[in-house]
Length: 104
Image 1 (cartoon, one colour):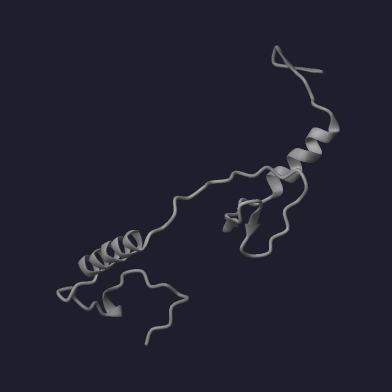
Image 2: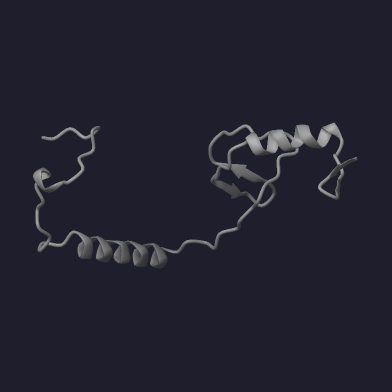
């Protein structure tokens, strides 16, 4: 134990620090999977280290009506954002051009 500004700091065993380094060096990823009634199966290969902590989110089944409603809503949003009345802006009105964008 070490004293730091009047507080007692307890240093966990080295195994904790090895685990912490592994945990904080891993990036968070979202993986698509399906449950076949017995096992959760990833839809694409991915190496998961032993003892990795996982969060599992069970999604409601998607119906054709839900999908159609989503596509209709998305199309309405795009129509509002990029409607026929939307002016066609020239690259000349851009105040700060993107150096990686090729002007055509």
